[in-house]
Image (cartoon, rainbow, N blue to C red; front, side, top):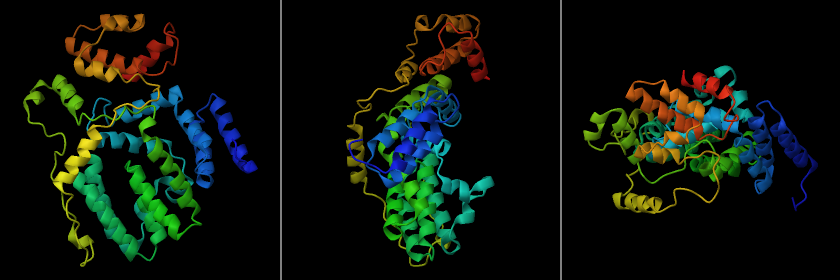
Length: 360
Protein backbone atom coordinates (compact mmCIF):
# COMPACT_ATOMS: atom_id res chain seq x y z
CA UNK A 1 0.00 0.00 0.00
CA UNK A 2 1.59 3.22 -1.17
CA UNK A 3 -0.57 5.35 1.09
CA UNK A 4 -0.09 5.17 4.83
CA UNK A 5 -3.12 3.84 6.69
CA UNK A 6 -3.76 3.62 10.43
CA UNK A 7 -2.37 0.66 12.33
CA UNK A 8 -5.79 -0.91 12.82
CA UNK A 9 -6.25 -1.16 9.04
CA UNK A 10 -3.03 -3.13 8.66
CA UNK A 11 -3.99 -5.29 11.62
CA UNK A 12 -7.45 -6.13 10.24
CA UNK A 13 -6.05 -7.00 6.82
CA UNK A 14 -3.38 -9.18 8.40
CA UNK A 15 -6.03 -10.91 10.49
CA UNK A 16 -8.13 -11.50 7.36
CA UNK A 17 -5.16 -13.08 5.55
CA UNK A 18 -4.50 -15.28 8.55
CA UNK A 19 -8.09 -16.54 8.51
CA UNK A 20 -7.70 -17.49 4.86
CA UNK A 21 -4.70 -19.67 5.71
CA UNK A 22 -6.60 -21.73 8.27
CA UNK A 23 -8.24 -25.04 7.42
CA UNK A 24 -11.54 -24.04 9.03
CA UNK A 25 -14.20 -21.97 7.24
CA UNK A 26 -12.84 -18.48 7.84
CA UNK A 27 -13.49 -16.98 4.42
CA UNK A 28 -16.66 -15.06 5.28
CA UNK A 29 -15.23 -13.78 8.55
CA UNK A 30 -12.14 -12.62 6.64
CA UNK A 31 -14.38 -10.81 4.16
CA UNK A 32 -16.22 -9.15 7.06
CA UNK A 33 -12.94 -7.72 8.35
CA UNK A 34 -12.22 -6.30 4.89
CA UNK A 35 -15.65 -4.68 4.79
CA UNK A 36 -14.85 -2.97 8.10
CA UNK A 37 -11.79 -1.49 6.43
CA UNK A 38 -13.72 -0.49 3.30
CA UNK A 39 -16.31 1.30 5.43
CA UNK A 40 -13.59 3.78 6.43
CA UNK A 41 -11.40 3.58 3.32
CA UNK A 42 -13.57 2.66 0.31
CA UNK A 43 -10.69 3.41 -2.08
CA UNK A 44 -8.49 0.64 -0.64
CA UNK A 45 -8.43 -1.87 -3.51
CA UNK A 46 -6.31 -4.29 -1.54
CA UNK A 47 -9.16 -4.87 0.90
CA UNK A 48 -11.70 -5.25 -1.91
CA UNK A 49 -9.51 -7.74 -3.76
CA UNK A 50 -8.97 -9.70 -0.57
CA UNK A 51 -12.74 -10.21 -0.32
CA UNK A 52 -12.70 -11.72 -3.81
CA UNK A 53 -9.81 -13.95 -2.80
CA UNK A 54 -11.81 -15.13 0.21
CA UNK A 55 -14.79 -15.91 -1.99
CA UNK A 56 -12.57 -17.89 -4.39
CA UNK A 57 -11.99 -20.74 -1.96
CA UNK A 58 -12.87 -24.02 -3.77
CA UNK A 59 -14.89 -25.38 -0.87
CA UNK A 60 -16.88 -22.17 -0.54
CA UNK A 61 -17.55 -22.19 -4.29
CA UNK A 62 -18.72 -25.78 -4.13
CA UNK A 63 -21.00 -25.18 -1.12
CA UNK A 64 -22.58 -22.03 -2.55
CA UNK A 65 -23.16 -23.62 -5.96
CA UNK A 66 -24.92 -26.49 -4.25
CA UNK A 67 -26.98 -24.23 -1.97
CA UNK A 68 -28.06 -21.85 -4.75
CA UNK A 69 -28.77 -24.78 -7.07
CA UNK A 70 -31.57 -25.84 -4.73
CA UNK A 71 -33.37 -22.63 -5.74
CA UNK A 72 -32.15 -21.78 -9.24
CA UNK A 73 -30.62 -24.12 -11.82
CA UNK A 74 -27.33 -22.84 -13.21
CA UNK A 75 -28.64 -23.26 -16.76
CA UNK A 76 -31.58 -20.96 -16.04
CA UNK A 77 -30.45 -17.84 -17.90
CA UNK A 78 -33.58 -15.75 -17.40
CA UNK A 79 -32.40 -12.29 -16.25
CA UNK A 80 -34.22 -12.14 -12.93
CA UNK A 81 -32.81 -15.54 -11.95
CA UNK A 82 -29.31 -14.09 -12.14
CA UNK A 83 -30.41 -11.47 -9.63
CA UNK A 84 -31.77 -14.23 -7.37
CA UNK A 85 -28.40 -15.97 -7.43
CA UNK A 86 -26.73 -12.73 -6.36
CA UNK A 87 -29.32 -12.12 -3.66
CA UNK A 88 -28.93 -15.60 -2.22
CA UNK A 89 -25.15 -15.26 -2.34
CA UNK A 90 -25.28 -11.99 -0.42
CA UNK A 91 -27.50 -13.53 2.25
CA UNK A 92 -25.31 -16.62 2.60
CA UNK A 93 -22.07 -14.68 3.00
CA UNK A 94 -22.97 -11.44 4.79
CA UNK A 95 -21.61 -10.91 8.28
CA UNK A 96 -23.10 -7.44 8.75
CA UNK A 97 -23.49 -7.04 12.51
CA UNK A 98 -26.55 -4.82 12.22
CA UNK A 99 -28.48 -7.80 10.90
CA UNK A 100 -27.43 -10.02 13.79
CA UNK A 101 -28.15 -7.34 16.37
CA UNK A 102 -31.58 -6.53 14.98
CA UNK A 103 -32.64 -9.94 13.71
CA UNK A 104 -31.07 -12.19 16.35
CA UNK A 105 -32.93 -15.46 16.93
CA UNK A 106 -34.74 -15.04 13.61
CA UNK A 107 -36.55 -11.85 14.58
CA UNK A 108 -38.66 -10.84 11.58
CA UNK A 109 -37.62 -7.77 9.59
CA UNK A 110 -41.05 -6.31 10.21
CA UNK A 111 -40.17 -5.83 13.87
CA UNK A 112 -37.74 -3.03 12.98
CA UNK A 113 -39.88 -1.29 10.36
CA UNK A 114 -40.93 2.26 11.36
CA UNK A 115 -44.56 1.89 12.40
CA UNK A 116 -45.73 5.15 10.82
CA UNK A 117 -44.89 3.98 7.28
CA UNK A 118 -45.18 0.23 7.79
CA UNK A 119 -47.94 -0.18 5.21
CA UNK A 120 -46.01 1.78 2.59
CA UNK A 121 -42.80 -0.15 3.14
CA UNK A 122 -44.63 -3.45 3.05
CA UNK A 123 -46.38 -2.45 -0.17
CA UNK A 124 -43.05 -1.46 -1.70
CA UNK A 125 -41.56 -4.78 -0.71
CA UNK A 126 -44.46 -6.62 -2.33
CA UNK A 127 -43.92 -4.69 -5.55
CA UNK A 128 -40.19 -5.46 -5.50
CA UNK A 129 -40.86 -9.17 -5.02
CA UNK A 130 -42.83 -9.25 -8.27
CA UNK A 131 -39.60 -8.48 -10.10
CA UNK A 132 -37.35 -10.56 -7.86
CA UNK A 133 -39.46 -13.72 -8.01
CA UNK A 134 -41.36 -13.40 -11.29
CA UNK A 135 -39.34 -11.13 -13.52
CA UNK A 136 -42.09 -8.50 -13.63
CA UNK A 137 -39.97 -5.35 -13.97
CA UNK A 138 -42.94 -3.06 -13.41
CA UNK A 139 -42.83 -4.16 -9.78
CA UNK A 140 -39.36 -2.73 -9.18
CA UNK A 141 -40.36 0.43 -11.06
CA UNK A 142 -43.24 0.92 -8.61
CA UNK A 143 -41.26 0.04 -5.48
CA UNK A 144 -38.70 2.85 -5.80
CA UNK A 145 -41.10 5.85 -5.66
CA UNK A 146 -43.05 4.19 -2.86
CA UNK A 147 -39.88 3.90 -0.77
CA UNK A 148 -38.84 7.49 -1.55
CA UNK A 149 -42.24 8.75 -0.42
CA UNK A 150 -42.00 6.71 2.78
CA UNK A 151 -38.65 8.35 3.61
CA UNK A 152 -40.31 11.78 3.40
CA UNK A 153 -43.25 10.86 5.63
CA UNK A 154 -41.68 8.85 8.43
CA UNK A 155 -40.50 10.22 11.75
CA UNK A 156 -37.66 7.68 11.60
CA UNK A 157 -36.02 8.14 8.20
CA UNK A 158 -32.76 6.55 9.32
CA UNK A 159 -34.47 3.29 10.30
CA UNK A 160 -36.58 3.34 7.14
CA UNK A 161 -33.60 3.86 4.83
CA UNK A 162 -31.56 1.19 6.59
CA UNK A 163 -34.46 -1.25 6.27
CA UNK A 164 -34.94 -0.48 2.57
CA UNK A 165 -31.20 -0.57 1.88
CA UNK A 166 -30.95 -4.04 3.38
CA UNK A 167 -34.10 -5.15 1.54
CA UNK A 168 -32.68 -4.08 -1.81
CA UNK A 169 -29.38 -5.83 -1.04
CA UNK A 170 -31.08 -9.04 0.03
CA UNK A 171 -33.05 -9.07 -3.22
CA UNK A 172 -29.90 -8.51 -5.31
CA UNK A 173 -30.54 -4.85 -6.28
CA UNK A 174 -27.12 -3.63 -5.21
CA UNK A 175 -27.06 -0.37 -7.17
CA UNK A 176 -30.38 0.67 -5.64
CA UNK A 177 -29.19 -0.40 -2.19
CA UNK A 178 -26.09 1.79 -2.54
CA UNK A 179 -28.23 4.76 -3.60
CA UNK A 180 -30.51 4.38 -0.57
CA UNK A 181 -27.63 3.96 1.86
CA UNK A 182 -25.87 7.01 0.44
CA UNK A 183 -29.07 8.99 1.07
CA UNK A 184 -28.92 7.70 4.65
CA UNK A 185 -25.27 8.68 5.11
CA UNK A 186 -25.88 12.13 3.62
CA UNK A 187 -28.44 12.79 6.37
CA UNK A 188 -26.86 10.69 9.14
CA UNK A 189 -23.09 10.60 8.51
CA UNK A 190 -22.40 9.02 11.91
CA UNK A 191 -24.53 5.94 11.25
CA UNK A 192 -22.06 3.09 11.80
CA UNK A 193 -24.56 0.41 10.75
CA UNK A 194 -25.39 2.35 7.60
CA UNK A 195 -21.75 2.91 6.65
CA UNK A 196 -20.75 -0.72 7.27
CA UNK A 197 -23.69 -2.02 5.22
CA UNK A 198 -22.94 0.54 2.50
CA UNK A 199 -19.35 -0.72 2.23
CA UNK A 200 -20.48 -4.32 1.82
CA UNK A 201 -23.26 -3.58 -0.65
CA UNK A 202 -21.00 -1.27 -2.65
CA UNK A 203 -18.51 -4.14 -3.00
CA UNK A 204 -21.28 -6.40 -4.30
CA UNK A 205 -22.36 -3.74 -6.80
CA UNK A 206 -18.81 -3.45 -8.12
CA UNK A 207 -17.92 -7.15 -8.08
CA UNK A 208 -21.27 -8.82 -8.84
CA UNK A 209 -20.04 -10.05 -12.23
CA UNK A 210 -17.03 -11.74 -10.63
CA UNK A 211 -18.62 -13.90 -7.94
CA UNK A 212 -16.87 -17.25 -8.58
CA UNK A 213 -19.87 -19.53 -7.99
CA UNK A 214 -22.32 -17.58 -10.19
CA UNK A 215 -22.51 -18.22 -13.97
CA UNK A 216 -21.52 -15.27 -16.17
CA UNK A 217 -24.25 -12.85 -17.15
CA UNK A 218 -25.67 -13.57 -20.61
CA UNK A 219 -27.82 -11.73 -23.15
CA UNK A 220 -29.74 -14.85 -24.18
CA UNK A 221 -32.84 -13.90 -22.13
CA UNK A 222 -33.92 -17.45 -21.37
CA UNK A 223 -32.79 -19.28 -24.51
CA UNK A 224 -30.80 -21.87 -22.57
CA UNK A 225 -33.63 -22.23 -20.07
CA UNK A 226 -36.11 -23.06 -22.82
CA UNK A 227 -33.71 -25.52 -24.44
CA UNK A 228 -33.04 -27.36 -21.20
CA UNK A 229 -36.70 -27.43 -20.22
CA UNK A 230 -37.57 -28.91 -23.61
CA UNK A 231 -35.12 -31.74 -22.86
CA UNK A 232 -36.69 -32.34 -19.47
CA UNK A 233 -40.26 -31.98 -20.79
CA UNK A 234 -40.47 -32.20 -24.61
CA UNK A 235 -44.05 -30.92 -24.57
CA UNK A 236 -42.76 -27.59 -23.29
CA UNK A 237 -40.97 -26.98 -26.58
CA UNK A 238 -44.35 -26.59 -28.31
CA UNK A 239 -45.58 -23.95 -25.87
CA UNK A 240 -45.29 -20.22 -26.65
CA UNK A 241 -42.35 -18.29 -25.28
CA UNK A 242 -43.51 -16.76 -22.01
CA UNK A 243 -40.19 -16.67 -20.18
CA UNK A 244 -39.55 -12.93 -20.13
CA UNK A 245 -42.51 -11.69 -18.08
CA UNK A 246 -44.84 -14.62 -17.50
CA UNK A 247 -47.12 -12.88 -15.01
CA UNK A 248 -49.11 -9.70 -15.21
CA UNK A 249 -48.14 -6.91 -12.87
CA UNK A 250 -50.30 -6.62 -9.76
CA UNK A 251 -50.80 -2.90 -8.99
CA UNK A 252 -50.21 -1.60 -5.46
CA UNK A 253 -53.04 -1.70 -2.99
CA UNK A 254 -54.01 1.97 -2.78
CA UNK A 255 -55.30 1.43 0.76
CA UNK A 256 -51.67 1.07 1.85
CA UNK A 257 -50.57 4.33 0.22
CA UNK A 258 -51.28 7.99 1.06
CA UNK A 259 -54.30 9.53 -0.66
CA UNK A 260 -52.10 12.08 -2.44
CA UNK A 261 -49.54 9.55 -3.68
CA UNK A 262 -49.14 9.78 -7.45
CA UNK A 263 -48.65 6.47 -9.21
CA UNK A 264 -45.59 6.64 -11.50
CA UNK A 265 -46.15 6.14 -15.19
CA UNK A 266 -44.70 3.00 -16.80
CA UNK A 267 -41.33 3.29 -18.50
CA UNK A 268 -41.67 4.06 -22.19
CA UNK A 269 -41.53 1.01 -24.43
CA UNK A 270 -39.00 2.57 -26.81
CA UNK A 271 -36.74 3.47 -23.88
CA UNK A 272 -36.86 -0.12 -22.61
CA UNK A 273 -36.05 -1.35 -26.12
CA UNK A 274 -33.00 0.92 -26.32
CA UNK A 275 -31.75 -0.25 -22.92
CA UNK A 276 -32.23 -3.90 -23.93
CA UNK A 277 -30.29 -3.21 -27.13
CA UNK A 278 -27.38 -1.76 -25.15
CA UNK A 279 -27.40 -4.65 -22.70
CA UNK A 280 -27.44 -7.17 -25.53
CA UNK A 281 -24.28 -5.59 -26.90
CA UNK A 282 -22.33 -6.02 -23.67
CA UNK A 283 -19.79 -8.85 -23.57
CA UNK A 284 -21.05 -11.96 -21.83
CA UNK A 285 -17.68 -12.67 -20.23
CA UNK A 286 -15.19 -10.23 -18.78
CA UNK A 287 -11.44 -10.28 -19.08
CA UNK A 288 -10.75 -12.18 -15.86
CA UNK A 289 -10.38 -15.89 -15.34
CA UNK A 290 -13.13 -17.76 -13.54
CA UNK A 291 -12.57 -20.53 -11.02
CA UNK A 292 -15.43 -22.58 -12.47
CA UNK A 293 -15.39 -23.88 -16.04
CA UNK A 294 -18.73 -22.44 -17.13
CA UNK A 295 -18.34 -23.78 -20.66
CA UNK A 296 -20.17 -26.84 -19.39
CA UNK A 297 -23.41 -24.84 -19.73
CA UNK A 298 -22.91 -24.57 -23.49
CA UNK A 299 -22.35 -28.33 -23.65
CA UNK A 300 -25.54 -28.91 -21.70
CA UNK A 301 -27.53 -26.72 -24.06
CA UNK A 302 -26.13 -28.32 -27.21
CA UNK A 303 -26.15 -31.86 -25.83
CA UNK A 304 -22.51 -32.24 -26.87
CA UNK A 305 -21.31 -34.27 -23.87
CA UNK A 306 -18.10 -36.22 -24.50
CA UNK A 307 -17.98 -38.81 -21.69
CA UNK A 308 -14.53 -39.96 -22.81
CA UNK A 309 -13.19 -36.76 -21.25
CA UNK A 310 -14.62 -37.71 -17.85
CA UNK A 311 -12.31 -39.20 -15.19
CA UNK A 312 -12.25 -42.98 -15.03
CA UNK A 313 -14.32 -43.12 -11.84
CA UNK A 314 -17.06 -41.04 -13.50
CA UNK A 315 -17.14 -43.31 -16.55
CA UNK A 316 -17.57 -46.32 -14.28
CA UNK A 317 -20.58 -44.65 -12.67
CA UNK A 318 -22.21 -44.19 -16.07
CA UNK A 319 -21.74 -47.88 -16.88
CA UNK A 320 -24.01 -48.73 -13.96
CA UNK A 321 -26.97 -46.81 -15.43
CA UNK A 322 -29.41 -48.64 -17.72
CA UNK A 323 -32.19 -46.08 -18.06
CA UNK A 324 -31.39 -43.52 -20.85
CA UNK A 325 -33.12 -40.65 -19.05
CA UNK A 326 -31.28 -41.32 -15.80
CA UNK A 327 -28.04 -41.60 -17.78
CA UNK A 328 -28.68 -38.16 -19.31
CA UNK A 329 -29.34 -36.61 -15.91
CA UNK A 330 -26.16 -38.17 -14.50
CA UNK A 331 -24.12 -36.85 -17.44
CA UNK A 332 -25.52 -33.39 -16.81
CA UNK A 333 -24.74 -33.65 -13.11
CA UNK A 334 -21.20 -34.87 -13.77
CA UNK A 335 -20.54 -31.94 -16.11
CA UNK A 336 -21.61 -29.55 -13.38
CA UNK A 337 -19.60 -31.35 -10.71
CA UNK A 338 -16.43 -31.60 -12.78
CA UNK A 339 -16.57 -27.90 -13.68
CA UNK A 340 -15.76 -27.00 -10.07
CA UNK A 341 -12.23 -26.15 -8.97
CA UNK A 342 -10.71 -29.54 -7.95
CA UNK A 343 -11.20 -30.57 -4.35
CA UNK A 344 -9.40 -33.90 -4.54
CA UNK A 345 -6.96 -35.72 -6.76
CA UNK A 346 -8.79 -37.58 -9.55
CA UNK A 347 -7.58 -40.91 -8.19
CA UNK A 348 -8.80 -40.18 -4.68
CA UNK A 349 -11.58 -42.57 -3.66
CA UNK A 350 -13.15 -39.74 -1.65
CA UNK A 351 -14.46 -38.39 -4.95
CA UNK A 352 -16.83 -41.30 -5.21
CA UNK A 353 -18.07 -40.86 -1.66
CA UNK A 354 -18.51 -37.11 -2.13
CA UNK A 355 -20.40 -37.60 -5.39
CA UNK A 356 -22.66 -40.16 -3.79
CA UNK A 357 -23.45 -37.78 -0.92
CA UNK A 358 -24.11 -34.91 -3.32
CA UNK A 359 -26.54 -36.96 -5.40
CA UNK A 360 -28.82 -37.76 -2.47
